[in-house]
Amino acid sequence: MKTIIQIILGVIVVVLAYMLYDSLMEPIRFNKAVEYRSELVVQRLKHIRDLQVAYKDCYGRYSGGFDTLINFYKNDSLKIVKQVGSWDDSVAIAKKLVYTDTIRIAVKDSMFRSVADFSVDSLAYVPVVHEPFDLQAISYMSISKVTIPLFEAGVHNDVFLKGLDRQSIVNLNDKDKEMNRYPGIKVGSVTQPNNNAGNWE
Image: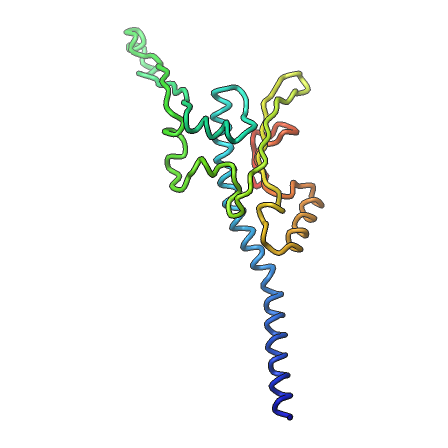
């Protein structure tokens, strides 16, 4: 009887030790998962920003929809101004050997070519959870009555951290709100010009 009690107590000690270890490791696992997912989200938001800037250079405004951005990447082109000769060479200028020439190059042939795993069809979706990013574009009227195009793309903590410990996500949201920060990751802003900065920068 004494042996059985000792075995039961031993099992209880092991179970309690494991539960204690697991509770200590949970914040570490959560933080590692947040860091991993955040890196993936930031990289995709940078791609969205780059494509939005190229789109604005062509059309004078940002796109408010991913379908338009994706179509722009697949089917549109960018103007490239090519300079022949040097404007510092007065002899070449006199002989009219210095000039600029405008050519067009397909967007898909000029952007993200060095990004090995880039897929424009995945651009709209948050990595890991495959939920769509929020995307908005507006024309902002400044105090001096100048119209400024703005865009914002982002994802809330509740979305990109889906599947992780719920209480840890709630705590992270509360911390962001206390610090007056957007509870998630975003680039750009539709409330005021911010030079298309990401909130991770």
